[in-house]
Length: 336
Image (tube, rainbow, N blue to C red; front, side):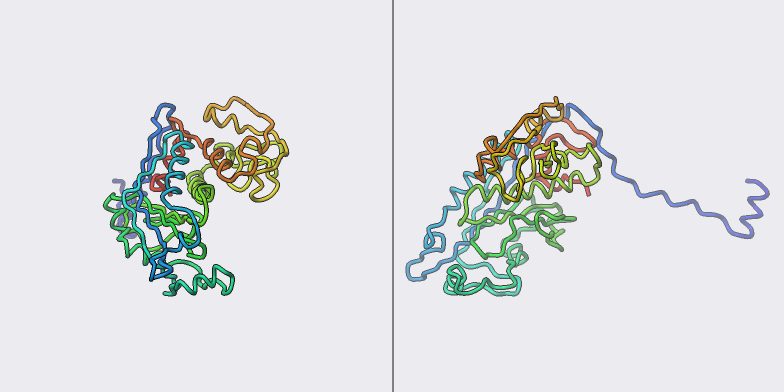
């Protein structure tokens, strides 16, 4: 130690070393061989199908002639398996049928007569509209079951005006998933998704809910990636927004769509949608395409087509898996 240093320390005190910076998570190394992992999610299936006539036991779905949840689950699960090229799989580990109306956030619960008045247009839907998710989490001990790794996500089937979002995320650092995240749910120790389906609708609408979940999760996955390295932004390009540079499009906008839900547009536009089947080794395959490629306006066929183009292969680029299904099925893999 120099004489000058000793003098300075005598008058001003010894300078403490600066604290070490907090360790930053290492960015995973890029790879062309890292295997694409299959994700198999265990599902708690909750079906709200209220009894409408106590004398006969007739339930809402039967009274209205709506669809059987079992058939919808079978069709939807098969579509996800097929369009993910086997990378995403679902197993129903428990099915619970609830024969009453779910409670709303303000404690209100429909009765058979009050609900039928809404359904027939004689009364407006109750406001606030949203269901009480926290009551459901408590009733079915969902946070603990996710923490214990007995379930990975929840599917809820209900009816028009029940108040469920198409999807919503819970768990530590949950993020937007087509709905605001459920706060104060970190007990689960990992993120998970609650899907909201309706047995008044069909499999196509289930895919609509699911693909919006895909959009939210992939936006978050690529949130720190810029320019052409943001493959998600490239994937969702459509001609109206990016003239002459259409790729796969978004859920609501096919490559040639001119407005929301315009999946039946016969107009031809150039698109490299076929080239996405070569991801990540693009070959410049640009073709003229129109609605005949994705079902001429059929919601289920369009969403199947869209999902089939989601990357599902081995490797990692810029720290992100080339198998996007690993994030779609398990949002806990998404970096903050």
